[in-house]
Image (cartoon, rainbow, N blue to C red; front, side, top):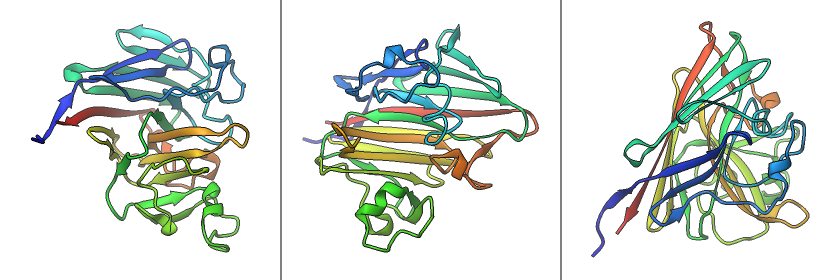
Length: 279
């Protein structure tokens, strides 16, 4: 007999000394975070190229662009209390507190910076998912495809010089994105606009990610790499990334595409992650 979903308590582990990276998100007998094949993550220094080690990386103030995956993933964070870490940069200070009361993971963030400071933040979560997994998001959600998708579209479909092409979820521009599927040699990045809550379904397990933040653009970024990246020795990596902002690269972000620090000088947001299982 199949019964309804029951909550699976989650626990988090992170590495404050190496960018505050989430190294484990586990519940029951499942580890949700994927571990990448790239060596050298422990030796990273500021200014080094991004090392795709998996887990969940904190990307701020951009994801793509300069510096690649932002400024904070390559720097040590300092501990400021139970579950609390801080990183200070010339332009901002970011504080993160993680708790897992009741088995639901709650990450509270607070960024202090000068009023008017613009940024993009993403919880760059790479997940270990089967080919049967899919992403559940509201149908019709405006979704921005990024340029690597151009090769998968009919000739001439990509607007010349545009940083993205927008269409409705789950198949913007006719390209289905909601299923992860087997490796097929493709890699696509997309951003689901005004989409603060999604669910990853990998039967019988479900992982729900929800982002709360008043007055800022909330999105979900998707990185569906089915063995199409990098060009040399490609591998499978699947990112479902709650995001403040609406563009991977801060340099591409228009007036409504980035988070902006208000006159009070702070932005606070909350990421909630929960898991359920169908029995």
